[in-house]
Length: 293
Image (tube, rainbow, N blue to C red; front, side, top):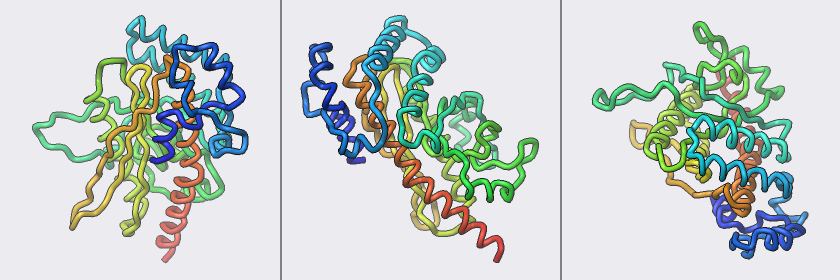
């Protein structure tokens, strides 16, 4: 969270060799004049390469176009959010081990859907838009076939019935909304999605009293990206899912916002590979040993 907050205010997000050029080219973007530079030996450099000057101009132009046309959510996804996630994936140090994909057609596995009060109405069909996932490793591949068989679907690491990523565990989830709309709906969709996700992780834990990881949730409203964090803890006999309120990462209609958002996404990909993957694989091995016993 501390590192995300630093990137969200711009610290260490712009390569030092680009600072002067960016300040001169975009004089109205005052955040570029702050303490934003980083050097090749910095922590930020370890997460991945920066976007190029051309990448930044393209992202800002496309985002401004979507904003000015008041585009619908699907247009933001196809013109802006999907390409941005693909770009960040290629910039990442972990490009071969962490991927992202569109999951707008994914549906939750009914076994993991959270319970809701009758007066709340039915859960929405469409849940979220994109995920970052773990590419298969020797450990995940060796355990995949031992997972319970889901009727009319097959084995699945996740809380969905979405075949394309069945053998690729979800690490980070992204919900998108058009600008000025859907804040409460987007938050509700993330609540439902992450609760089901934690239900799935808890089941794979086979009831072990092991702390589940805090899961990052990304929410966009038009060009503005934010991050929330979800965790689950026991309170007496009840498991409670808590979502910590958002950190606003940046606005991709301006260059400083592109640097902030891409740095934050690269940091989260680094977390997925260096923190979430080891936890997930150790959990699988522990569950496998319990099954043998």
